[in-house]
Amino acid sequence: MERFDSVVIGAGVVGLAVARALAERGQETLLLETERSIGCGTSSRNSEVIHAGLYYEPGSLKAELCVRGRALLYDFCASHGVPHRRCGKFIVATDAAQAESLERLLAIGQRNGVDDLAPIGADAAMRAEPALRCVAALHSGSTGIVDSHALMLALQGDFERAGGTLACGAELLGASAEADGGLTLHVGGDEPMALRCDHLVNSAGLQAQAVAARIDGLRPGSVPGCHYAKGNYYSLAGRAPFSRLIYPVPEPGGLGVHLTLDLGGQARFGPDVEWVEAIDYRVDPARAQGFYAAIRRYWPGLSDGALQPAYSGIRPKLHPAGGGNADFLIQTAEAHGLPGLVNLFGIESPGLTASLAIAERVAQALLGRT
Image 1 (tube, helix red, strand yellow):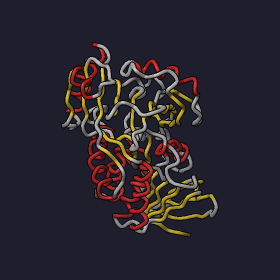
Image 2: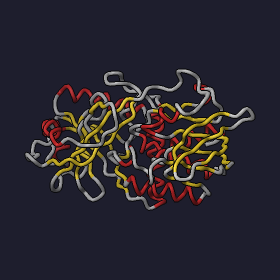
Image 3: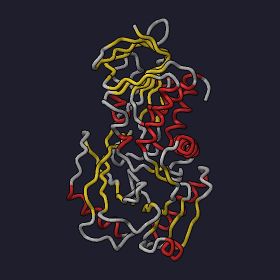
Image 4: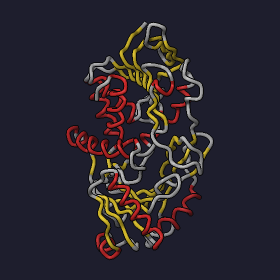
């Protein structure tokens, strides 16, 4: 039977960061991924935005790990040659009621340690972005964009240089705790195997609850529900007349239909919030009609027919529609009862930004050191 110090399930950006952190701390680490390559799920279906940390409840894990993760991520990208740009963004109010929301966002961001937020008037914002229309704005200078695939490849490179092993096409079939400590895992795929490990990290994203259901001995009631919030994206035909990201004030379940730019300058809009029962990444062209009205609140010059279906992503929500915003859940033995196991539930936005900080937290939980 194969034996590893640590096994991580799920090779998205968070799983890669966790596996890298464990391997670099001297753990013989195996990373299991059911797909044929890394980053096929949520990690490759998002806005690729490096968030500043102004949206999240002060004192929450999302707030703490986003701010910490942002600093770590910018340093990592610079040292590893990962394409990125600190382009900044405007969060814009298009009526007086939304202007009050900007004041609340500013206060939350400052409490979270985001020290470069600056309120700006409508005239200044529209001088900076002439195509924009608003009554007030908030400038976030530390917001940026990143090539998420290049980031994941860099994390994989570090992980493998530290002696880690990546196994794609490998699905966890079951796991159980042993009386003498550690866990036994049964893995299917091209090369089925049984193995032992001291530490197991469930970073399976949309499948984290399904994976947890295959682990024997979890405390009853410790696995939360999972609800799917689909976000659809549409690309813009031609170049957008903006140099920064443009976000409306947040809406229930998401951050509103915002404009993001990729590193080549191509604009895309989204995501919206569509609650679904199953994973389905098809984008309905008809949903674009709702996008036009939302976008024209801050960009009235958007032309008819300019939006094209691009892609969609699905966020693993811990609460259903109308159930509020849940925090990240980094679940240890205190909650589920199995020593050596960490379950990561509800790792949605800002999971990409926070990935390196989440990895630090998991390493500390398992090894007692950051």
